[in-house]
Image 1 (cartoon, rainbow, N blue to C red):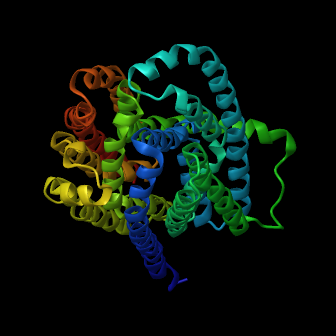
Image 2: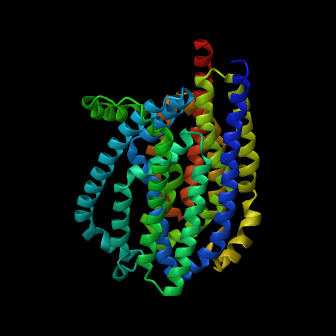
Image 3: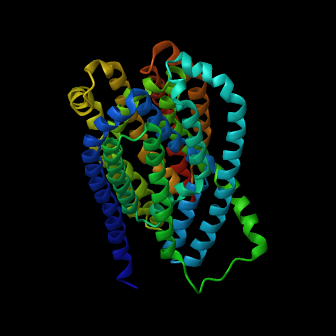
Length: 449
């Protein structure tokens, strides 16, 4: 008993550093793959096809919002159950949320298909007006693949479970494997002169298939033959109860996801797929820069939840301070300096002229992402404490502002206006609101001791 407590902090750091180490390896693999893949994909797909592929990548990022926050709520609950070594509880929790997400994915896909049936005749003229190749069938193809991603909503639960079990390195393996398989797919498509639609369809299915494999592998870690079965009459009742429990996590999740994905989606909606290509290439470059820090944030969340479940607040304070240093030094500083190092790298990487990447777009995207990342450690701390209620309030306000102002801003100012709006929302609303939320939460925690 006396030796156990000192080993717990060491074990947490070991798992967290394994996650960040895996993310670094995944970034290296991703950079190497992208160096070869992006020029080939641009040649194979053209600007419009590459933009369609980028739109589907954005769709995959937005699909997770359809889970109603149940994924993040499950992450906290599984982390607490894992701290108690309660595999039966983990199995029951995962089963409840998985049933709910299966129903939600199929329901949303059916509603989307019905909406598309009525919207398609009106969208075709718009697609042609923004320079889209309606004869190439990209509009119908993107809609079809988006519906497939929506129906596959439960697949995205695998990553949340990996982080909940403090095995974030598995997500890094998933990312690296996805990059490698997509590169091999690109080489095969280029050599075999595949149709662009065939290539994009298979490229979108690769991460979904790997998510299924990851979920199946994780399931073996908590499956216990001796675990008592849940009463059959309560299973669906528990599933629907999660729909309410997840709402408190959903608004902060929606605000963060929309902050990252909505600008690109709005650019696609206003200016068409071809205009998304420079935006998507810049986003991919910055993703390489911030991937290890993002993985660190996702890994430290369940570690903090574990620490608070065990009453180890000293470890939690050290972890939060280190997280601030990791994010500031490893991500924010390179992003702020990106106007100096990014342009030559982009021109060499994509073989596109420098005019394809407007300096104002680069500066706006880098500053907006840097500002969002600086808030991430505070958000992780609040979520790990199970107190994201304040984020629900100002997150809702941020969502409304983005939905109302982004389309008009892009229509008037072009693609660069989208990240400028997100930067203004971050600086003017999210920063002061989160500072107040942090102070209130800290007082509540101190009084509860």
